[in-house]
Amino acid sequence: MRDAYFAKTEMVSAKEALGRISADLIAPYPPGVAVVAPGEILTAQIIDGLSTSKSAGVRIAYATDGSLERYRVVAR
Image (cartoon, rainbow, N blue to C red; front, side, top):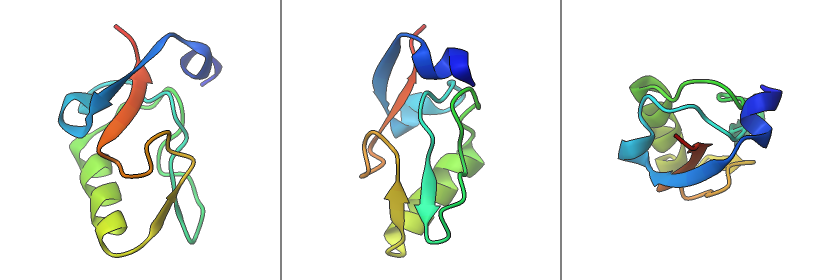
């Protein structure tokens, strides 16, 4: 977790983020429970679930890009 948080990062589109290592903590609020922590692999289920939640009006906390159009991931 710590290594991913402090690693060199880059912003990529949601499509490009699939299979990449997240550098962000991302939590829909409410309830405010993290769905993604730094160091986790961004899967289709995670990306789709966050997008669906955002579309339903749920606030997305802590993501570098709250629109979820781009994700901050560990640079390759």
